[in-house]
Image (cartoon, rainbow, N blue to C red; front, side, top):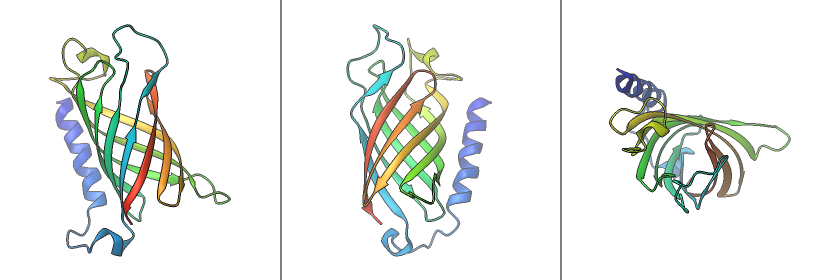
Length: 164
């Protein structure tokens, strides 16, 4: 039942974002396609089961309306290859310095399996809902943001706009 709720939330977010399927190329419409990477995650509490290196690579499509869709492929804290399919929204924090932003994404996480399936809430057969708030700064085609992973960790990612 929880998995169905996750898919329903993703479907609602997708319908809010994808209103016109015959849209021109991203560069012609103000859409942005960004690639991103994070070299590591910093945990709030040490655990000997954590791997030395938890990385992430991803791609994100941002609409002029500030709605976004994305995919991240990452090595979770326990060395398992995982994915995060998400939708979200980005808010400008200040009119004085419009480069600062707050981003909130939610979606489906896959990859936390035995014996670590209980390390993320509501996990069922390796699938669980995920919510990631982030604080970021954008300059030109580059961005840097701090992603907060609940009470477990945070990661710093760098992004580059491939298309805009």
